[in-house]
Length: 339
Image 1 (cartoon, rainbow, N blue to C red):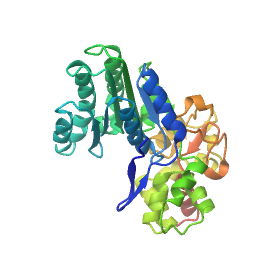
Image 2: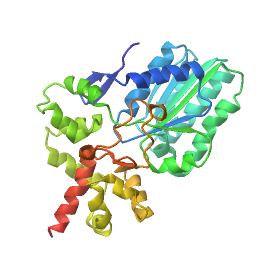
Image 3: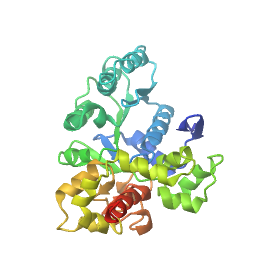
Image 4: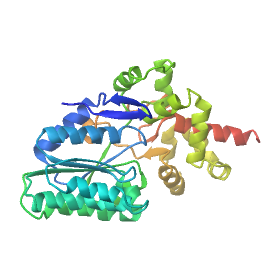
């Protein structure tokens, strides 16, 4: 299978690495089709986009008319001989900000319907990245139901449909999970072995692998941020603090629980943990709450370890990366010292 090239940082591309089990899972989906849309969730920057782009390549090679759309980045891939598919995706992506994102998200489903109905394609795949941020969280359930409608009520008969959505938006998980419209599957950061393969591909990265692993927990995006910051860890943590709005008021309000959580994230699993705090940490993409069993059957690619305090991983709750945990820890320390 051809390995796609992906942008690691501006001016540096790397070939899709590892995730062998995740690609095998795509091949299995291609063989069986998806009875329900697959909604893949996981930490920001863990590699969901890279996997989707490699997946669309795999599906093309397996004989599918395949469409990949990333509404937020206005990016798309169309593997089909249907005449006007690429043209319409180009037109939608050129719309104004706020319009293009919604149009691309909607068009992904519309074009899949046309491939089955108008073009009589027998094998169709539609893969959509970070769509819930594009259409709005309040429309996440409607979007998933529309994908299910494509599978259950197609405009013509077909052989197989593969429908996959990926998201870093933790709050949509509970909204979608309360319906039987999709299968939710988590993806974690890269395995140690796979991350080491990526690490070896990055030129001029003067950072011992063991230290890089402890800082990132296998998250490629955090590694990219460290690379761009010339390994200035303080700069990367400061940016996390700003972007995640880890403020004085937030940390002081929840200090009692946060101090426990930076030592052991499973402290947030206790019965007396305020639901508001869990919602806040989830909405800010700081933690993944209610982790799945580590049975590989539930996971896209390899599951994380059962527990790893150094990486901020608990049995039921995990910080998205070690530096997410470090960002909260530093703010707690800063304001406890009266700075």
